[in-house]
Length: 284
Image (cartoon, one colour):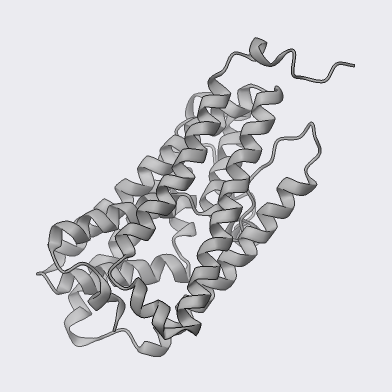
């Protein structure tokens, strides 16, 4: 069964699933790492814009997804996704998720007690080497451009292709446009809140802020490893693949709720007054 056939068959359910996928995509470790870097830089050079870095990043990222979905939707009736490409893409995602999970878990475990943990991503490092100064964007247009560059990856493009082929089953390019907008809206919710949270975290450097940064990084690492493990099991055991078909909404929602809960806890921690942790902080 192809990915399109395993998706919900009614349009409303597909729209809801795509929005959930956008929210989930916004929690990607590469997104978190890029927004972290952009927000930290702008806190120093353009404090007024720092809190909006997450939203601007997702707008640029989503614009590329929409463009690809629209372009492919025009060709979707003459071309189908090869099965070999689907399997290759699945293994690429598994490998990167596992690597990101391990790297972020290592960062939490090795962090100094007095240091905040920053999310670690691979795309930012790779693109930084190519373009240089990637996280030193200090204008809305440049921040959106960074988000667009991050969309030029196998994982994001494959999702845009899936939206285009799915939309072609229901109509024309208008359906692909709606799915792309819903995906971008989901990312905008996640990345926008993330940018606001990081800007708040940077403004305080007390004991609670240190704990909050570890809570979020640990959850992202654990979810990445769990998703990679489940993806490997599905590819290795056809029975598990069959069982999981039609449950995409459940799995996506569960992941969003888990990470969202850790995000909410981190935000709650950083909203506590600094005085409330004075007794818990080590004294010299």
